[in-house]
Image: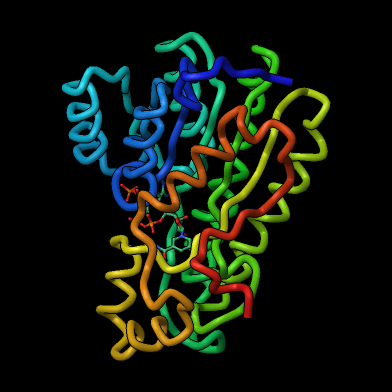
Length: 259
Ligand code: NAP
């Protein structure tokens, strides 16, 4: 079990890798994790974006770095994890948050490549991250991992079928890894965000007329989350404050999955 000194940030001294950090929930997490005392390594494909966020964090005195990577590619993820270990000496925390919504169409009209993109980003991406992160964490005696699923990992809705399947699979991988590595002091959890203001959602609303109103009709709080609200939940689960939580999926959905 890990303990924390009172008064410290919840991630004080931890080395944290965050995927999907170039926008939305991941970019918000970079700022929240740094506020909580972490040294962060940002990962995404758009290098200019993560470089800008790192520059902003460093200007505020944080220890931050980045590694451009496509989470679909195992060698990319391995390089990013190695970068974290070489830069800061270890890896304590990982927020596997990169994801893709994919094409919006009825199941029978979607082609294989639409299915592949969503599965390869959301499921293979988390798979690649878990393998390389767990290898690094076992070398230093443990860690904490949070994977981003979705309310679409808990219930079906009007989002495309491959995304629903992929986000259910993320929860399956989370549970499997949590059980397998519980005695190695590695906790693995998932968050299931509800509708959150981000590029992915703005793009979805732009492509599907009437979707925003439809989504709001099923939002108990009649609003979307801000990315920071989701990032706060991830930070808590990543931290030692959640020391007896593993294999769990935490809805961060404003009550969306209660009915
Ligand atoms: P976003 O702003 O579009 O962020 C998606 C992030 O994933 C970007 O940083 C993107 O970076 C990265 N990414 C996508 N494909 C990647 C790849 N192959 N390799 C590396 N990085 C990749 O949307 P978001 O809402 O913050 O999404 C973050 C996570 O939350 C996703 O897993 C999403 O499924 C999940 N989620 C979102 C909502 C919501 O309502 N917004 C709800 C539930 C779950 P690059 O393009 O630079 O690579």
